[in-house]
Length: 223
Image 1 (cartoon, helix red, strand yellow):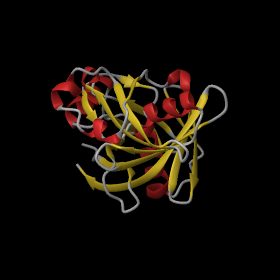
Image 2 (tube, helix red, strand yellow):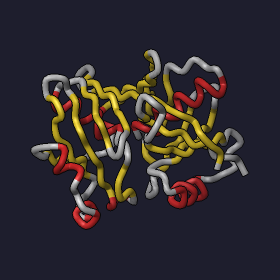
Image 3 (cartoon, one colour):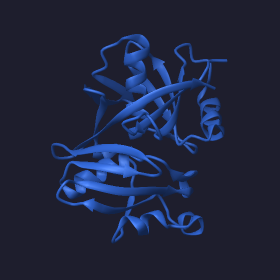
Image 4 (cartoon, one colour):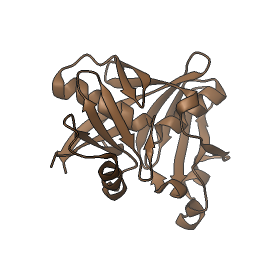
């Protein structure tokens, strides 16, 4: 059985926190789609990425419930993994025939996505960070794929957020890349999002119909 690498994506400056994503190199197609779906559902992660072809940068992303074309933290994680593990220049990846642009800036890995292929997110703006932090488990379970957020400093573009998607098999997501992208596009601002317990996400409003998300990555372990 192929081993699973675990990348923590959108860590803080010290490499802490971040959202884990499972990464499996499966160029010989050891696992069919049903097996891939089962592994993603049992992983405990919000996504597992299967690398179908290293040279072509072709990947498949599976959430706990289905294959999806885009997941911000999964794409940032696998782009960093391919660059570090195989010493490859990674300028793009291909997911379900969609080309995802990749770039690196200092210690950050960025992906640029077409907003039309990003999953839908609901948004709930609260008055302050304390209200974001005090959402109970019972309240969270009632929210359907919702990012709850508040401004930390509107002028500086800093935000505090948490994401809940129990209806998608993800009770709480430590760091939500695609939701951050869509929020940046909606607000028309570059954002620094302090997400979950301590993750940091950078999001940019890009050209019309596109947005970018970036962050730090730590590849930790084999499962």
